[in-house]
Image 1: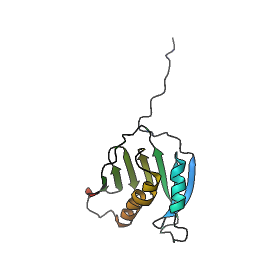
Image 2 (image 1 turned 90 degrees about the vertical axis):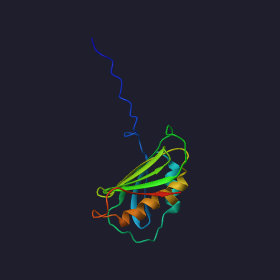
Image 3 (image 1 turned 180 degrees about the vertical axis):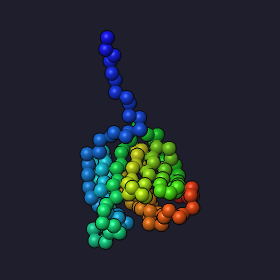
Image 4 (image 1 turned 30 degrees about the vertical axis):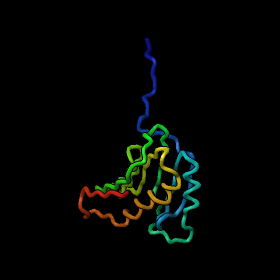
Length: 146
């Protein structure tokens, strides 16, 4: 007798396809962006600073998943810093994490966070903090932004 195998659900969207790609420079950082939302790519290319000299030769990998099932609240923005991670949340449906050591950003956006807000406010907020972070920074600091 053979058991019917059903795939394990990917509740964390770890394996969500991100077919849209772009290379942009924001806040002086070259970014290799992967996403499942074409509007994010369009907005990041519009926001992109073409002539800014980059702070690094290798781009930061940015993988952003638009999660249609995420809670649709748009509460305050909170940034939590615990080296080597910078975590930005918007309510309970949006989380963006920057791993400073691996130079990678992984984000899950609810439908209430527009592509424009992501490209012009949320991502630059993390990138500005990335410049200030170092291993000798105090552990577990947080800051609220309204």
